[in-house]
Amino acid sequence: LTVVAGVFFLIQGLPACPNGSAPQDLPLPPPPPPPPKALLLALGVITAPGHFNRRVWMRQKLRVTEARRRGVRVLFVLGSQNHMNGKQRKAVRHEERAHHDVIF
Image (cartoon, rainbow, N blue to C red; front, side, top):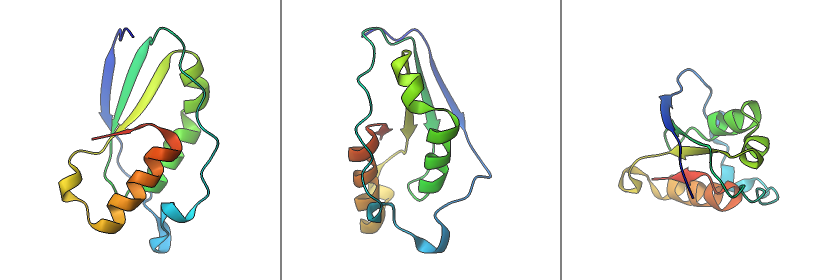
């Protein structure tokens, strides 16, 4: 696995979960396709645990599944798990199992 470049940026101004909706209540999507043999670019998006809808929006707008097939890996960087409450921790674990793109 070879990483040519890594890019990190901060997304602000996108909506969070409306009306306290919980991501763990959503059905799991099909697993992402396997990455190609050579990783061309790793893109890290710094985000907060409660910004589930922002990550959903980013996955759709960046066409993460299509990008992965082409050697681009988009990862959501959440920081420390120690700063999450139990509900957030459960939701983030569910999201990680669904998308395989959340790191701490």
